[in-house]
Image (cartoon, rainbow, N blue to C red; front, side):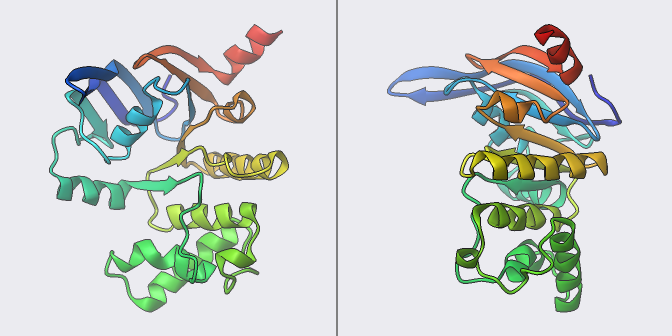
Length: 238
């Protein structure tokens, strides 16, 4: 179902945890691919494996078995330092609770990832200004998170995720802390970013949020039980 060049591929991806002497199979032999430019929603009940899968995609954890390729590079067995390098180079993260620095301006919050890239002050500011403008916050550069609405804070977080020019945006319940109207505005922003070519993968519990994506993966008991395109869901509803 990939729409562009292959960007993510998993082959028999599995993750086990040992808890209280018992082995929990959090992810079971997941094999799928995501093409460049796709917009994918991941759904499923608590304990279904969706968060484990996102942690592996985000290079925050390593699989017990199987392989994960991002941009053609196998990342399944990389060291923690190498995984961190992949995260910084290829991935941008958006979280439910925004994770902004409270005493720092919107402009400086967006620049944080660039500090570790060894970029000059002028370059950092220029890139951060560009991304804040893209998310509609060029008039809020000096505002701290407490001076911004929830939707504006999430826009700052999205600008921060974009500032390193990642190949993929991973969003974990990005509308979970927002009211429905603001959530719709954030999802419209994701659609605009996707239309410009950005690959987006998000976790959500809400079907109306998943409907903004072009493809939905549904997890249950560590397995993908359905993989549907938006057109398929529309036909099924008619």
